[in-house]
Length: 475
Image (tube, rainbow, N blue to C red):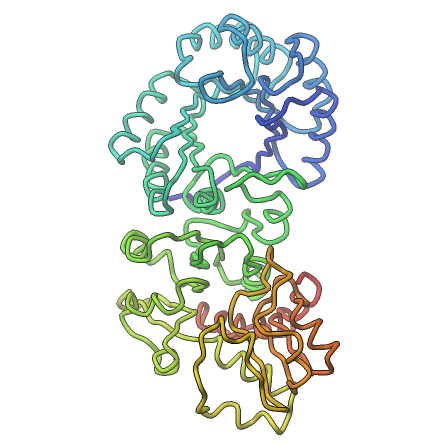
């Protein structure tokens, strides 16, 4: 694992393999990256329009506001490059001469490394040479990854880089286990997995000892790469170290979650050494058997797993058991057992109680009702003064134009509650407002259940007003 003094850089890729860019756009993007909090920028030469090595490298490196990593991906990896090996070598030699801080050479091109190293010495260049390997298929077994690392390390490069494409979040533990191995060899390692399932390989990089964390520019999202803004505002990874406790949202999909915006600043506010991250999970059984370390101390549980997850808990709180749903899991420190709770129920009830005052106190009691299939709700006629609570994802971004009941029935409801909080004002709430009903949004419920989760995660009293300010300003 990494140490409290582990040094890492936030690196922003500022070129896109899907389209070529001008050198002027690159200079502009470098300045944007600096303003957004990047420490280093990555420039791919194969993405530059009509690339001219001397002319374009001079412009880039003479106008760099930050350290620059120069890379070139070969055509077999799906990039735009049509240059031959001699042009690649020439470009990388020029980059070293002109002041590139890092150059990247793929392991497939390692035959040019002795020439580059000699060129670096002859020109007294301080640029670091990175040898990289991109694994585009399923993540190999641990033994194969260690062999790849050994091959890269044997080249004598300054830094090694391994990039995989995880088909499942459980594959990422193979990457995490490489960091202590490379620290023993005293070789800096950049290792991560691309795609949404690979996101935590970036966010937990400082905990395990990685050299780079990648962050994307505003307006240029990259699957599996956090935005520079989120790294700066929500995660603040400079505070993460080997002792940091990991909490995560287990869901599928997970990109909509605003939990990191709320929990991470709240951890810092009370000086709790924790990080809260989104976890795209496909298989609960595999997930819990793989992430069994005490470092993974607790989880929020989202759609579609709140019912299914009960069977993976060693113990379940009576309220959660009676509801048949868990939204919070704690790994008990003493014995490592997973204990399930439900903070959604009380959050929903208290949010509605506050809106209706005296009339809603009875809502906390068990209610006798009739279950109907969802498809028949469009024909459902509620009694006058009824309460509607939408606990489904209907109306959630990106399908924001949907509501779970017929519009014509909304005038019959005294109060309409929507658990959806993205967007903040759903179509259901807007239509209910227009029909004259009192409304309670999912943001209020989200805040209250998050307060309950914070208390369970940390064993501390949640900073309620601080959390409320975040919700009001960011949601």
